[in-house]
Image (cartoon, rainbow, N blue to C red; front, top):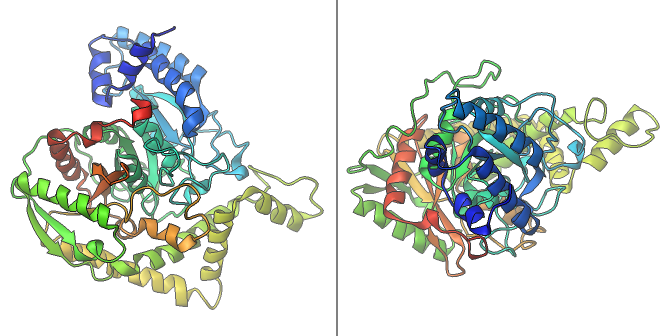
Length: 496
C-alpha cells in the first residue's frame, strides 16, 4: 500500500498511546501503521544503522491477522496493532538473534523469550531487531559486529549503549517503543544520550527467560519510548512472575498507567551529593539543576542525601559483571550453535579459534578479566570482596529511602560523545555509567527522561531512582513533569 509522505510522517509522529487510541477507534488500520513505520525505517535506517534485522514481511503478515482480529472484536488489548522493535538479544522464534556478535551471526532462535511471547499475545507488531553493543558490553554502541549506531541528534555522535540501536530508533521515530536491557545503565544512558524515556525495572520484575545473558545478577529488560506514559503501557504487558526464570519476582503487578496523574505535591526527592561532584560536566549540571527547580515548582521537597559507597560502584561492577560474563559466555564454544572455525585440528583448536574469531575485542577483554577474578587464589581477593562492597552500596540506598521517596540526579556525567572519541580509553568509556551502575548493583528500579539540551544541542537525561517495585511511582513523577514540559516531544531536525 503506498502512502503520501505526509501520511507516513504524521502516523510515525504519534505516540504509543495515540496509536492505540486511533486503532481502537478505527481511525487507521494496523496495516497502514505498519507500512508507515516500515517505510520510515527503509528511508532512515541506512543513516543510523539502528536495526540489524528488519522483518518487513513478518510485520505485514502480523498486521493483516491483527486487523482481522480487531475487526471481529477478538483483540482489544491496548498494544494490539502497535509496532515495536526488540534489542537483538531477545530470542525470537525463527528470527536471527545475533547479540550484535559474529559469534551468533547464524543463530536463528528456536523459541521466543518471555517478553516476546507477552508482546505477541497482546497483538503488538514486531518491526525488527535493534543493533546493540556485542553481548550488551559497551556504553556507546561501537562494539557491534554490525557496525556503529549513530545518534539522531548528531550523526557524528554515539547513541550510548548497549541498547543504542533501540534508543536511536525511538528518537528518530523508527519505532514507537522498543525493549532494551540494562545491566549497568544500558537503558538509562542511551535514553539520556538520545533524548527519550527509558526505564529499568526492579531486578526480577521482568522475566529474563530467553534473554541472552551478560551478567545474570544484573541484567534486566525494560521499555524505551517517547514518554513515561508509553513506557507504562509497555511495562504493563511485560512485567510479572515467570516460573521459567528462577530470579523472577513473585511481587504482584499493578496497572502502571492507573497512578500516572497522581499529584506529586510533598514528594521528597533526594539528591546524592556524590552525583554532583567532580566528574559531572558543568553544562549537564546546569540543566539538571534547572530540572530539579522545575520539580520544586510542582510541589516536591528537595533534600541532599549521602551515598558514601557509590564511588566504589564502577570498580565493583567491573569485577562482578565480567566474572558473570565469563561464566555465561563459556557456552559459546563452537560445538552446539553459533560460529565454528573452519577445519579444526582437534577439540582444543576448535574451542580456541571459534572463540577467537567469534568474539570482538571488548567481549574478549571482559572474559579475560572475569576469568582472572574467578580463578583460584584470586576469587576471595576480587569477586568475594566485590560482592561484600555491593552489599554496602545497597545498604546506602536502603538508608536513603528512609528519608526520601525517590532519588534524582544525572543519568550520565556527559551528553553523547563523538564516535571514536573514547574507543582507545577503556576507563573513560566505563565512567560513562558512573551514575547508573550503583542502582543496578542494588537491584533498584531506575529511569531516565529528557529535561533539556546542552550547548551543543545534545539531549540531557534526568535519572530517577525508586525504591524496590516502585516503578508506578517513578512513572507518575516523570509523567507529571512531561505534562508541563515538551522536551520528550522534540524530534531531531533531520527526522522531523
